[in-house]
Amino acid sequence: MKALKRIALFLAAFLCAESVFSQSRPVANKISAMAGAEKNIEIVWAFPERTEPKITGAKVYRAAKPISSYSEIERLSPVAKVTGFQYLDTVSKGGEYFYAVIAMTEKGDYKAIIPGMNATTAGVRPRIPANERQAASENPKSDSEENLPSVSKPDFPRNTISNANSDAKISISKRKESAPPLRKTPLPFPGTILGLDKERKEFSDEAKKSVANLANVAEKKKVAPFKTPYFFEDDMFAPDGGDEYILFETLRDGLVQRKYLESVKLFTDFLSVNRNSAVTNRAEFYLGESFYFCGEYENAVQCFLTVQEIFPALAKKWIDSSLDLMESDF
Image (tube, rainbow, N blue to C red; front, side, top):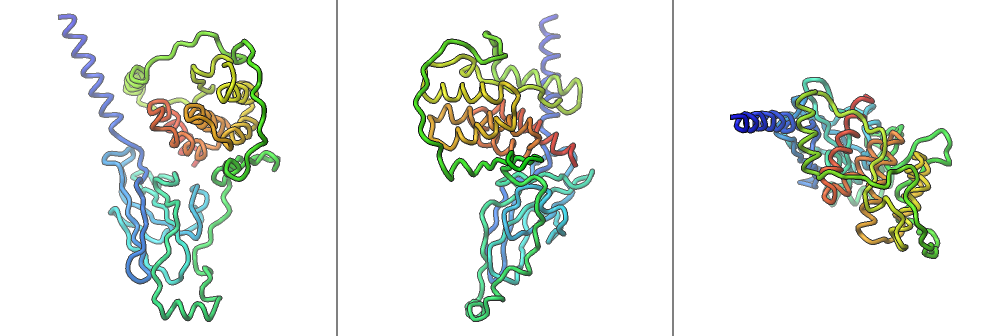
C-alpha cells in the first residue's frame, strides 16, 4: 500500500508540474516576411498554444533596419493590431523592411524582442511596378526611405555591452571582422580553475528538470536569478594543450574571477578564431553567461539559443531566467 501511495503522489506531482510547464511565455515565434503582390508584404508568425499571461492579440511593427531590442520600437506606433497570425502590409516606397511582432496579453504588452523568433533578421523588398521604378531612377529622392518609420537609437544595442566607459563596449561582430594573431600553444601545467572545487558532481539533465518542475509546483513563482556562473566539468582542470587549454585560460582570466566585462571581451576574441565544435559550443555558453551577469539579457538569450540544441536543459534554464529579468526591467 505504501508503494502505491508513493506512486500516486508521484503521478499527481508530475501531472501538476506538466500543467504548470505546459504554459509558455507569450512570445511570437517562427516569424517570416515575404513580398506579395505590388507593394504588399505578408508577415506570418505563430504563438504558443497556452501562455501565461493569456495572449489577446498582436502588434506588428515595421522598421528600416533589423529590430533587435524592444527599446528600438517602444517610441514607434505599430503598423497594425491584429488577433490572428498574419498581416498584409502595404508600403509606398522601395527599400528593405524589417518586422517584429509583440504579443498583447491580459496584463499588457509582453515587451520582449528575440531576433529570429518574433523579429525578422532578413530584410524584405516589395515588388515595385516598372513605371514607378523608372520614375524613381530619374528622381533619386523618391527612392529614399524618408517615409519609413524612424528607429530611435536603442539604449542597449544588440550584441553590444553598455558601459559608462566607451572602451568597454564590445561588439560580437568583432568575431568575424578580424582574427587575433596566432599564438603558440601554451605548455601544460597542473592545477584547477581558481576558486572551484576539485570534485564537482553534476546531476543529469532529466534529474534537474524533474527537481525544477516539482519546485515550481510547490512555490509557484519565477526561478530566482542565478548568482554564480555555471562551469562545465570538462573545464574544471587544466588540459594538456590545444583549444581546450586556451579555453581554460580564458575562463580563468575572466569569468572565474567574476570580471564579466573582461570575460565578454575575452570570449568574443576567443570565438573569432575557428576552434573545434565542442570547445566552441562551451565558449558560446560562457559568453552568454558573461552577458547575463553584465545585465545584457537579450545578448545572453541569443548566445544560449545558439547552443540550445547542444545543451537543451541547461540552456533553457538560463534563457528562462534571462527572459524573467528582461520582463522585470519593464
